[in-house]
Length: 185
Image (cartoon, rainbow, N blue to C red; front, side):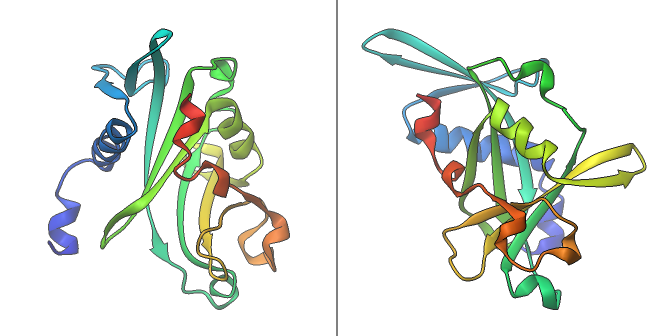
């Protein structure tokens, strides 16, 4: 399918939720869609174990990955995705131990397993340490998540002005959240 046809395939968040459902099912969870996205919950997960039934609440975000082309950027990263969030967007939910944010990232060529599972309190901290940006909606945080060109298993969120990044010391490593379904246990 070409890029133009893919862009008509549906809302990206629905694609992200569908990918997340398959991934979560493969991990032993039974995902249910919420009719209304209230309280930052897109999916409910259910899993039976020796202790009974466990539930998790999931907010899903989808991000497109783009190749890095700028000279200063492509020396550090090979692909990147960005999204704007309100500052403290999840502050009312950080005490919810069963709420997680799943971030699905995909290239135009297709999904390659880049799914991140964040406890909501961790994700809120990451947002608040990312770039401040002025948008039409006012001051927001620009979350740029990028893959290292040196070690393609490492992922980072940038916390400094894009052009000021000289090395990975001005980034937050988020590799530990990639495909870490054990965080849901």
